[in-house]
Each structure stands twice: as structure tokens, then as C-alpha cells.
Length: 329
Length: 85
Image (cartoon, rainbow over all chains, first blue to last red):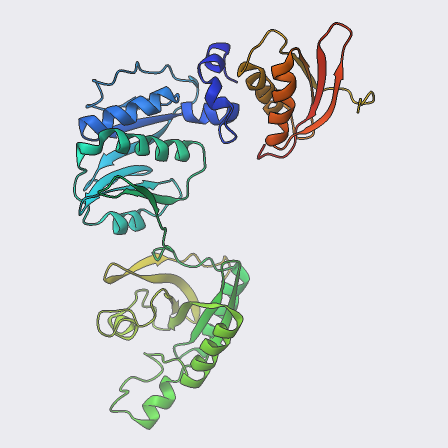
């Protein structure tokens, strides 16, 4: 609960729908570390301190605002870092940079994807300090939105050379694998097990809230039998989605508004990694054949699934991430 | 409009306050109640009489009653509504 002096001090803010007593406590539970050029840092610190948030940093000594006493003395403050490009906050915080005369600000929350932030902030130069007060106020806005729980996992603002502020659109995160319900994962493992000793394959399709498994036939055996010169590998060491089934699946997904989320296949020999062969298939010319589609490799040994790894296209290469298997599988 | 059957969960007296503290007190008192809780606000004068019920309504809370008292003050009964209020 706020004390009487705090209620008096922050009365105008307490009136705001998004603040109130709990919001004011949240603003006071944040410690902001600012590493920005002097003018921007001083302006940001002034706005933040006026709002009840404590600010530390080497370059804010000139701020006319006295440090605020912490609102919540007992709980450890949540820390947000505000940095100048090309630096990037370690965990959550704000990055300020410039690009062709524009000032660009990105804010990252605890649940935001840091790889996405790195993608978005790539190539940003250190901020131009001529617009110190305006940019400082936007830094404070992004920090306060974060403290109040109003911010998206990643959100951005830009200031045009003419001084106009606009929001920057978020993009779907390509660095996180789809969330697959355990029952679907078990059905996938059963299907891949039934294909042994060959590689098995399947496709996961769905929407955000619903994922389903489409078991696929491995057409590699037929390809190899028909044209062993063009398809030297057998189905023991390679997979190929059966073309008509694959086309039918794409058409159906198009009709139902679903999306292909992932292509899964097995390595019966225990290989846990997205292999060179897998990479050549998934990105034949260094570009992903199926943009936005994840790959899942399930490694078998002794006839049982042992490990699974996602391969996600990120910044010119596949990034591998463990996929926990259901217990008892 | 009077709801004699309703027992308030909390009471505040803002007869000595001026704007904006009249509604600041009311808003904080509402936020400290569980959803569905009833707050009795004792108020006095034209400004709070006009603004306090209206501001509470703007935030989504319900005005249950507003009644004059013999001593020249008013008694306002508010019900705290959803978490977004």
C-alpha cells in the first residue's frame, strides 16, 4: 500500500486507469540503469523519476530531479537496462539507436525473444542526441509501459527526421518452436516408430491454439527404386515427403486457414542433429525452402525415440533447440 | 435509488478533500476492495457530487445510490467492478 505522502505525490498518476495504486507500486518496483548520451539520459531520468521510478546511470548527474526514495523497500527491484545501439540489453530493457536520420527505440520484456531483438536492432548506429528531450520521454514511456505490464514482449517506436513518432510493427518470432501438445507429440513418436527401420516423416499443421499431426509416407524408397542415380540414398538414411500427399495437405491447410508449422522426421541411427543432408533439403540454395516452417528431428536408438531437436531458420542458418519428449516415450 | 439492504465493505469520508484528491481517495479505496465489494463515500459540495460518481462510472464501476443526509453531506454507494477498472 502506498503511504500518505506517496498518495499526495503521485495523485495525478493514480487517477489514470492504467496506473492506480497497484500500477504506482509497479512503477516504484523498477530500477532503471541508463547508459545513453547525456541529454537523452537526463530527460529520460527526469520523466521516470517524476513518475516514481528510480534511475541509475553515469550520465544523469545533471538531471534536475532528485532521486526518488524507493516505493517498495522490501522487495528487490526489477531491473531494466536502457542502452545505446549497438549495445543490446542483456535481459529486459530498451535500446535506442539511429538509422538514416530516424531514431529507433526497441523495448524487450522478460518474455520477449532476444534473438528477435537482435534481428530488429541489427545495423542501428548510436543515437543522435539532438532530440534529447523527445527521445528521453519516449524511453520513459517504454519503460513505464513495461513496468505497468502494458507492453508487448517486443515493441518499438521510431522518430522520423521531421520529429514525428510512430510505432514499429512486431513480427512473428521465428526463433521459437511451435508449442506441441503432449498427445500430438506421442502420436508423432508412434508414427515414426512404426516406420522403423526406415526414416519416418510427418507434418504438424494448425493454428496458434490447435496443432494436429499429419502422418506422411516416406517416398524415398520409391524414388530410390525408380531412379537410384538421382536418389542414391534409401529410406534408411533419407526421407522425402510423398509429393501428392504433401500437395493435398497444403491445399487443405489453405482451405481451413491452418498453417504448416513443422516438418518432422526421424533418424533411426541415433543422429541427434539436423544433418548436412537435412540442411541441403531444407535450404537448398542457402535460403529456406519453407520459410517460417520449423523442422523437428527425432533420434532413435534401440527402436525407441531418445531425443528430439528443433531446427529453426534464423539469420542465415538453422538454430537447433531441444524438444523435450514426453516421459515414458 | 437508495439501497438500504446493502452493507458497505469500506467507508471513506472525503468531505474535507478538494479536487483531484476527492476522486484519488475514492479510486484507491475502490482498488483496495475485492471485485463486487461496496464502498460508501461521504462527500460534500457541488464539485465532488458531480465528478466522483461520474468518474467512477467512467472507470466501469457501478453507482448503487446517491442520497442526501440531514447534515448537508451526501452518501454515495459504489460497487467495484472488473479487474480492468
